[in-house]
Length: 104
Ligand SMILES: [Zn+2]
Ligand SMILES: [Zn+2]
Image (tube, rainbow, N blue to C red; front, side, top):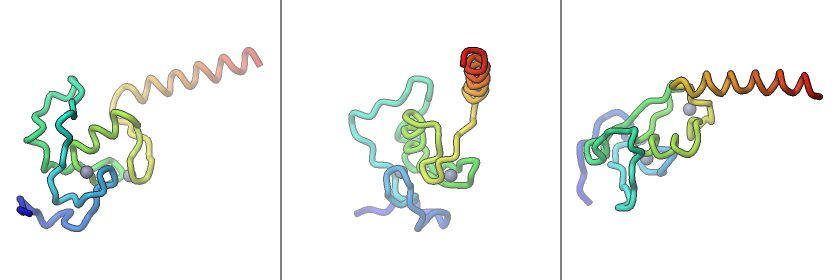
């Protein structure tokens, strides 16, 4: 086993997506394809760790994969309100509410 750029940060912390230590690089399957909207280089981000608004930390690539499936934090399930999608959902919720109150 070779050890790579281990930082003092996150040395024992576990990524809740892949259950590997944050200091270990992400082991991506060969078939893994990133969403086109993420214009990133897989190899460049294998060692990247990212912090959620709720202060939970994950491998950057793990988080990208996770958020593709679910807009919540893998650890605490807090909704991720990163972009306009959140506002759209809120708007849709209000419309649904209105609709329900009118037709129930
Ligand atoms: Zn991970
Ligand atoms: Zn969290």
